[in-house]
Image (cartoon, rainbow, N blue to C red):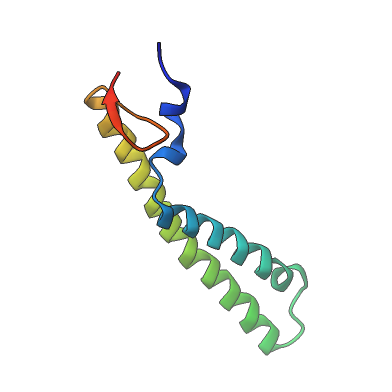
Length: 92
């Protein structure tokens, strides 16, 4: 019988990756107000562009982390292994 907890992505995500995802969410949420209004002058336009650049940089880091997790699952599947909630690897 297959343990559904063994397929939980959180079992493979490291603490650092979880914190990075939370960080991106918080940055996007806090910066969203900078993107709501149309810029009326050059300084406001610079703020909007800087905000977009910051969100893009962090999202690229997250994308790299997601690809890492996908690769880990691919390798686990290739060798018919599961990861339990405790992080232990076992045979399918």
